[in-house]
Length: 503
Image (cartoon, rainbow, N blue to C red; front, side, top):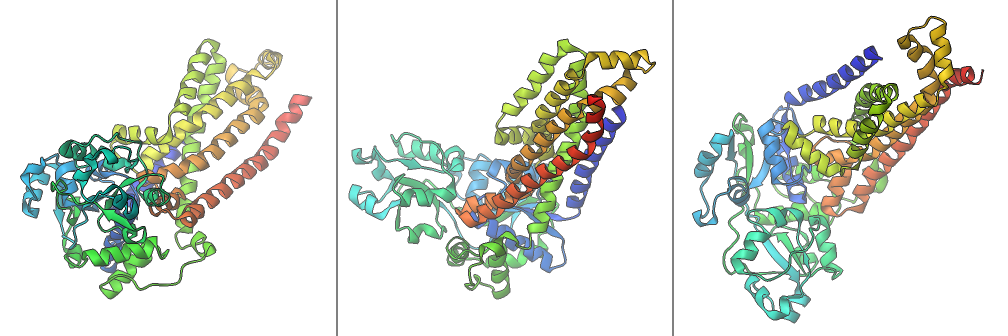
């Protein structure tokens, strides 16, 4: 078992190292989890590739904190950001310092090993919005009008990041002295449908959002000038060469950005299509026919996502087998330790996946494959450890004693008698762990590890049910195929040991 454990751990570590080394040879572009960031990330990636530079796009990595960690660890080299966010959220500078120049920003960012460059040409500020009909009914046109008694019953639908940002809701609420109670966060992509259905009354938006006009929203005037300028720029590591990206400077105005957002959110085009059209025509992509669901399901990225998903599932499973089987054997061999071992792996299973991923990002100082593999490995431990322990306990004690009386050592008895007889139960645990990991692996897309979850996250960002289904359906089919594969393996491997047990 020691050789098997060492081999499994080594193979898992090799897979992680190989993936990370491959990524190190490319310029990695990141993006946040909203439409505009996806599009700009694709524009940057395609601009680099057009000049013969290998580049990849890690989509939808979450909020500013995750992207900051990604830059610091080298998991991401460049991503689209906004000057106001850099000043308030990243550098924690007070708003009283006004809107700094790029030179000032670079002076402040230099100690972090970062720089900002390539102003894209538009300002995408935060704003608050309400349905025009609801705002007219309550007489609300400015943010300060929310102080009126008639506004106190408004239901808030604010995004998670806006609720936490230094330039978001807490600071805005303090600046305007708003008495409104803070509600639970709502995903930005879902907020528009929620306000359209009158489930919420007030949401935060970006000024270049394509749905503002479509949903007939009134953007509230920032009469105290709370929000700073959010000029779109590229934030990158100091070592990144700016010259290949300089051609993007000043090329995207607000109207062009709104049009590109609309191509994705309203016309159903992909981020890559819109970016390609923009770069080809020096303007937003022309409208094209909406793709069918089959086309979206088997889009060109299908093979890449499937390979990433399989690597996440089976890479973590190999490591879990290498660690979990010896732990199960130890719990069986020393019964006093069983409660502690089984209890510890059971506790790991109760940690929410996003919370575990966030903890691992901070602990490992990295995003992408490595924290995703570690998280999936931890989730796979419980069924493997528990079933190994249960399978060995189910082997009649007399069989072990008989083997010892025939001259076998305890290690030989374990390998040649007890483990083969426990194999059906052990394999059932491995199968359970594999199927669970297929579903859990979709969460790895939130930290740039790829897989079919990438489609789900992107679909959630633009509230596109077809995109989400194009990711969820192959993940579900993959779970069924993995279960069928392990059923076949179980029938092939267990037939011999089962016959010995019956004899």
